[in-house]
Image 1 (tube, rainbow, N blue to C red):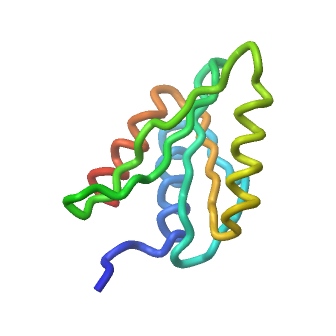
Image 2: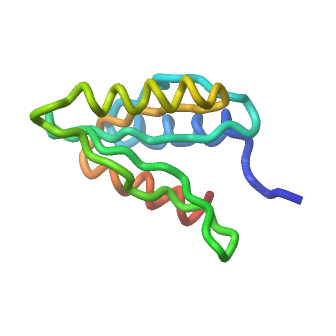
Length: 113
């Protein structure tokens, strides 16, 4: 039996944690309520956006792994990637976090997710 939290509860928990730390979180794309895949886009002080995707591991864990960074010279490429991913996977959730040291939220999900 899969012990994963439903996606909507995990999203709500991440949003609440970010807000408790004084940051801002928003859902850019809402996916399947229970089993949707979650992508995390992080922002920090006007720097380039970074994307974390959950990747299944051989040991059964599913950590968020850094997958790409927005190219400052071609920022639309990053958004195009997200648009294509959403078009291919209607169950996909895309969550944007704007907070100092945003990688800690992806790391926290690795420990609890």
